[in-house]
Length: 55
Image (cartoon, rainbow, N blue to C red; front, side, top):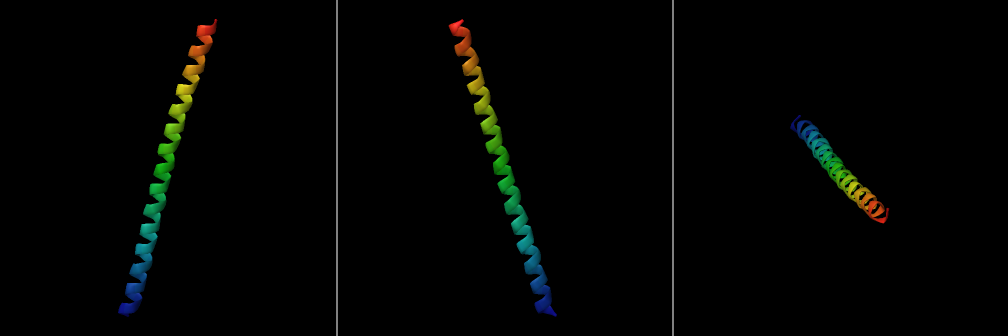
């Protein structure tokens, strides 16, 4: 009986650890997307600045 209980506990722990890991990966993706958006905004502002200087 204890063996089954331990086995179920291990399965639950594995699922919890896996879910935590996946949520951390998603969080990292969000950070990267925010960074990419910031870089894109800076590039756009630079293009607009260069265009206005040439006019």
